[in-house]
Length: 250
Image (tube, one colour):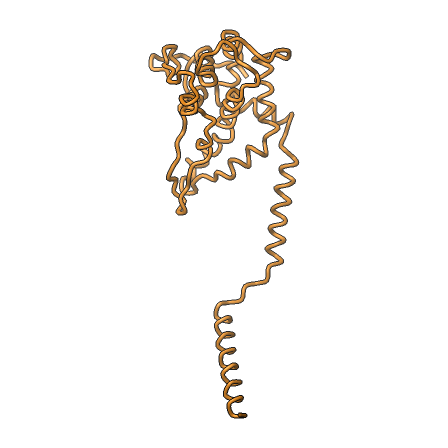
């Protein structure tokens, strides 16, 4: 995978003067955080219409890292601002925002990209969010493999932290793998050959589907409504006849 040449325009969202809205407080960070579950769980009404769905500022910035032009060094700075809006001096390997931001970029460039193309081709079908979640679970080993590659590339084998300058420098050097949809898809394909799918999850899913099919086969067939009505009428006539006979006997 060769690094592609890209020119940055004056209107680039990766301008070094980009403002940072968060001041490092918990409220500010949570307001813009990609971690918020609403980014993955839009509220859908009974009619199938999305009544509440939004995407965070952080998510838009990360999508920009994948789709917009710009130098990898500038994208690395934007990525750092997403995971560390307080601009701390150290970036920890165990940082949850780091992991979830990378996972978002990976799934956005692969699984979500596939779903977007399907939606464009067949807009009347809508989006199957359950299918999106199932694919993430199915390809979990491959996704974890890409995360491991990212950690080894940026932090190295023997380090669990990097200072801010070194982190941005290492990420900019390796950014050609992570900051383009095409290259990230190629990395996904390579990791898939090595790690494959979650066989335990896939086996459990198949077993659940088989159990549902077996349960459906064992359910008694529903009687036609007309037969049920006829049965009720017959029962009423029979009960009435019994009552008349009893009265005659008395």
